[in-house]
Every structure is written in structure tokens, then in C-alpha cells.
Image (cartoon, rainbow, N blue to C red; front, side, top):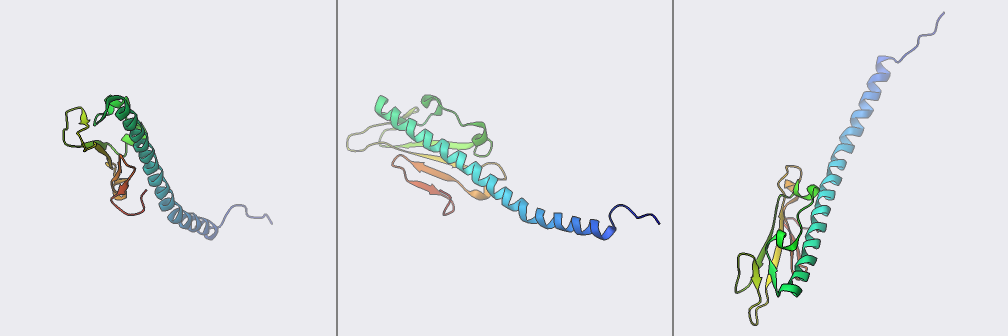
Length: 142
């Protein structure tokens, strides 16, 4: 008699069930890590903008609300998920290009990154101020 070769239908169904269980567990975890990675890239960019703003303040005695003035633009991996990144400059006198120092009223700025991709939308906005105060729409995102 010849021995039958191959897999039985039951063996194939067990393998399909195991792959399904692994996929149900692995896919959400992977998506969570992707979201965290995108957030980390946005946070790193915001910290870089903050450092450039502080250098600009030393040079120009004012903050700017323009990325072009700082000589920086959002990297592709950040702008793909956080297209709405803005610098809001505040003080007593705001010009089109930035904020100037007013006596006894130093200028401040806030960088806000709002997610635009559907993948990041549930993550909420992030903010960073000139004094290093970190904010987010949901707690624990910084």
C-alpha cells in the first residue's frame, strides 16, 4: 500500500485558525506602534523648532511664526500625518513675521501639531511652548 502524502483538511483548518488568532493580536499592536512612532517624529520636529526659535530670539530679539524664517520645514514622515503644524507667537506687538519684545512683556510662542491622517486622528493634537511646557489633547501623549 502507498502512503498518502499531503495535509488533511482538519490540519489546514487548524493552521488557518492559528494564523487568524495571531493576526487578531498582532495587527492592533503593530498599528499602535506605528501611531507612537509618528507621534515621536512629530515631537522631535517640535523640539527642533523650539531650539531654532530660541536661537532666532538671540539673533533677532524676537520669535518668528514662520518656518521659512527659521530655515526649516517639516520632514515628510511628519507632514504626512501632521500637516497642520503651526507656530503661534504672542506678545504685546505681533508683526506678520513674528513677535517683538515689549518692555516687561517677553514674547512667547506655542507650536501646535494637529493630526490630519486618519491613522493619527485618534491620537489628538500636541503642543510645545517656549518654556518647554508640553500639552496634548489626551493625557500621557508626551
